[in-house]
Length: 124
Image (tube, rainbow, N blue to C red):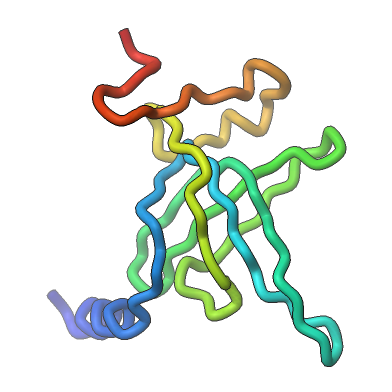
């Protein structure tokens, strides 16, 4: 392990944020702190996690939601101080790590099977 990897590992341990274990295909709710002038508020962004990059301190994830029949994607740094909380709403069953194909889908074809405790559904 080189020096940069050691420093990244120390920084991640120091941040030690309360981040739930989620993966692409899961529906997450991200509460983000937004500053407007002198006021500060919390805004929720709920949608499907379509990708997650694990790069130590530089880890990030992208959430996609449909808003007024228009797809909206937002990328969040995982260890950002602007993120108030991340909540796992629904766990999904997918077989890929990057769900870019969801950008072309709408309606029923954009649904993802829900993972239940026990064996994975969606595969028979």
